[in-house]
Image 1 (tube, rainbow, N blue to C red):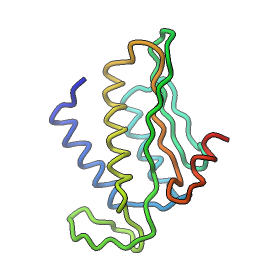
Image 2 (cartoon, helix red, strand yellow; image 1 turned 45 degrees about the vertical axis):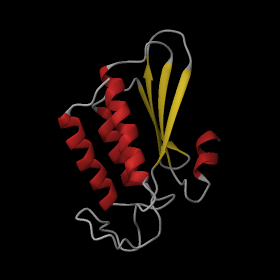
Image 3 (cartoon, rainbow, N blue to C red; image 1 turned 90 degrees about the vertical axis):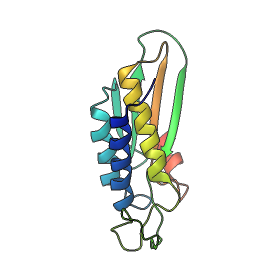
Length: 144
């Protein structure tokens, strides 16, 4: 599996968009929609939304018996002003992705793009985009 140069350019732009529009724990509605919209083009077999609040899971099936493997990232940002000065800095006062969750989300979305091109050999792969990781209540809500 290999990402193309075009994929990389698109993923960088998308990550920067996420970075500019951070949402803190339990408020990740727009971020979750961004994930769902991005993954729609990758052809998951199933997308689950509203997990633990705004969590999203995309499931890619092989059609053959085998293990289920899950990869997880986080959707939420921190209640911190961004003073980085980068051109894609947060546009939301008092909120920023200073912990890398925007990058983790983009990496997981890149895996979704690859799984859309090349399904698992057997079993299934679940991509879990967890809400409210920073407050600690997102994981409990997802598995409830």
